[in-house]
Each structure stands twice: as structure tokens, then as C-alpha cells.
Image 1 (tube, helix red, strand yellow):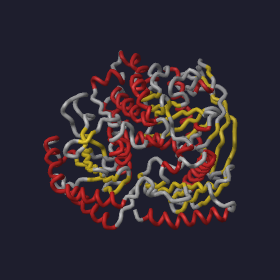
Image 2: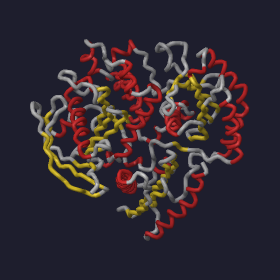
Image 3: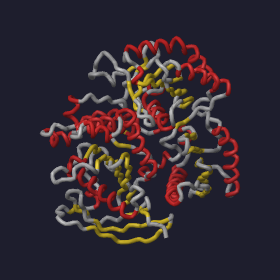
Image 4: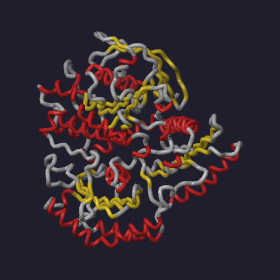
Length: 574
């Protein structure tokens, strides 16, 4: 028999919890799985001594009827290596949202999370805990770095709009960490640089709070829900380019590569509107730069007050109203505690210069076509701007980030930091050389891509609402957002549940035989008579809603085949 593993959808019915120094008493039921099958379901009692605070499951999770603004959602980051001694428990906390939660709440959430991580390792030492389902809440875990954990706690609200898919929430955690490392380096590296923790807290609080503004709808965080089941976070969306245009793009890329001083070539990422055209970076770095560009750099972003994904979320245009109040609270609970130790996130703002690359409205287009910002300036409000820098994850090399924009074309140029001996002066000269050498090619590429572009509905397939993505390449294509809004609520709910089941099946297969690829097809008739379909073949996943399909399963299956024959070969050409 295989070693038992804790299934990621472990169900725990919590009766009571006592917290002190992150120890707790727990009475509940846990399901132990092996090979995708239930091995046993058992009652468990953990009863450490010297515990003196008793609370309910609701208060244990840190969610109560008095929780403000972000009710139903909490987000924290903590370091298991810190706060191991009496009186130092708060040292463990690196980030907590909402920031004005009482210390008792923060310690309770993190204490429970640490306990669950430790406990589940007994049954599954080789696989980190990912999800714990309680009666009223879900704990979503992500081990971002060794002993650095990110945890999101979401309320199981009875409202249908608050139905989450766990994998989608995990990808939010992965995305924010990956972007953080791109701009600031790893959390562990910042802790080693300043062991007191003030430096990393300052960076985390500023960065993540700016990131969360994209999820604000009015005064509430609007996390990915069932309505987002036809989108896939953590993927790039590519533009289909004709042969003639592809040749011109390749020629432009060669010119850009040769623009760097010395023998080291420059890397580039080229976007047309919000779609990827070309990249010379590895997949992980491409994804990070693409995500940042779509959030803060593309023409759609610069021409509006909100990021280019805001139209996907109802009410997000009012998010600025709540942004200021949330930023005002950043670090406020820790300020008093750390004041005497001089490690407060707020106090450190004066000591540390903390670039905030996710701040809204900080990029603008200069007269020469290059985007400018004061985010990386030595002082806030400084008239002299410094060039942005990023860290490539594969090579861990620091790069200058130069962005040029011509109409709908955005060119991200990455220049090795070590190659620019004269710093900003050398960059200025290099930008002029790029304009001289590549200006004509840039205009030519933009014109051809514009002529071949079919508009926002270019990838709409009549009669289908679909999501197609390649998990190996992190590339996706989906029905346009405007078309997805026509899908009924019942259909989206059914598809979201189907995707949850597929996520579980993929996880079982991965843990039992990592080399095995899933091949499956599932067709379900929703209660509104729509067909919701999932098909996985050789690493490619297709999800589909057919609301006007014939009554028979055969008709639905044939419709999927026709779609696959039409779309998937085209996607392979990208």
C-alpha cells in the first residue's frame, strides 16, 4: 500500500481552538487519501499543555461580525524560522491584511496555519499543505519560499457570488509573490539583509497593498469567483501573427538585441495591445513581465485611470475610493509594537527607499516614446527620475527595464545592469541609438499588426464560450470578456464546479505518477440544460460552455471535436 497522503481538499470540522505561542487544541475530522482514494477518516485531538485562551471556530479564523471593509478575506505572510521564543511571537508576522486587525486575531490565524502545516506534514512530508476546509472558512496555503508561507482565509459566504475555486485563489498568491521577487528579490534575501524584519515588512506591505487595489470593488475585495472560470491567471495571451508580419517582428528583435553595449545581448518582450507578440526571455520571466505590462504599462492602462483588466470586474472603477483608506492603515497595528525596536513598516519608510512599482498612474509616455516614472527616484516627488530595474528569476541577474511605446505596440527592453558603466547617462545614449536604428522597423511592425488585428472579438468562436490553455507553456486563449458576460449564472457555476473536480484529479495523478499525463473528457448537463465540458489532452486543457446545444450528448461531443479541429491547430502555431 502506498504511503497515505493528506488530500488537498481535507475537511476539518473545528469545534474549539486555544492559542498561545501558536499552540492550539483541535478536535475535528480529517480525511486521509492515498492514490486518489479515501484510506480512512478519523477523529483527531491535539492537546498541548499550558493553553489559556478558548475561542470559537469563527474567532479562531480571525473573522468576526465586526471585521471591517475586507470582511470574509484575510491574507498573511509569515516566516516559520522566526518568533520561536516566548515574547517574540509577533516577529513571525511579515504581512497581514487587513492591517488593522488586532494582534490576537493575527496570532490566531497564523498560529492555526502553522499548526496545520506541522500537523499535515505527519501524513504528507513530501507535499506541502495546500488547502484546509473548515465549516465556515477555507484556508489556502502557498509555500512561496522555504519556511515562508502565504495564507489566504476566505469566508464561505452563503451568497452565490462568493463561490471560489481554490486553484484560482492559489494562483493569486503565486502571482503576487512572483511579481514581488521580480522587483524586490526574494523575501528570504531581504530578511538576511536586515534580520530585524523592518526592511522586508516595508516592501511587502507597500507592494501587496498596491496589488490588492486591483481587486477592490467599492470597499470590498472581489477575489476571482465562479464568474472567472473562463479565464486562467498565470498565463500569457498571445497574438496570432501572419508569416509576413512574423518576419518583420523577428527582424526588429534582432535589432533590439544588438542595442546593448558590449557582447551581452538585450532581451525583449513585445506586446500588441494586451497580447504577447514576441519574447526572448524564459517562460517564467516572460509571464512576470507580461503580467506587469498588462497591469500597468499597456496603452489601455495609460489611457485610463484603471488597469486594463478592470473591465472584467464589476464596480472596479470605484476602487480608488477605498485605496487611500487602506493604504493609510498599512502597518498601523505593528507601528506601536515595533516603535521601540525601530522596525515598524511605517517607521522604516523614512529609513528605506521603497519603490512601489504597482502604484497606479505612475507611468506616462515621454516625448521620445519611452515611458517614464518617478517610482525608482531616490526621493518621492524628485524631479529626476531613475530607470526601473527588475530581477530575472532564472539567472538572478538585475536588469534595467526600458519601455518604448508606439501606438498599440509596447516594447519592453531589458538591459543588463552590469553592462551600463555610466548608469543613467549611458541609458540615455542607448535609447537614442535604439530610436535611430529601430524606429522604422517599429512603425512597420505596428502597422502590419494593426491591419491584421480583428479587434476585441478576434478570437470569438460563434456558439462557443471557451477557455483553452497549455499548462506547460503557460499560454491561454479564451472567449472575449464581453461574450462571457452573456453566459448564464447556472452555466458558470456548473463549469466552476467541474474545474474544481478536474483540479483534484490532476493533483491525484501528479502525486501518484508525476510522469503520467491526464487524458480525460467530461461532459455534464447543467440544471439549465447547458452543456459544460472539460477535455484534457497532452497537457492542453479545454473548458467550454454550450448553452444552445442539442439535447444529445453526441451533439455536444461533436461540437467539441469541431472546435478542437478549428482552434487547437491554430493555437499550436503561436
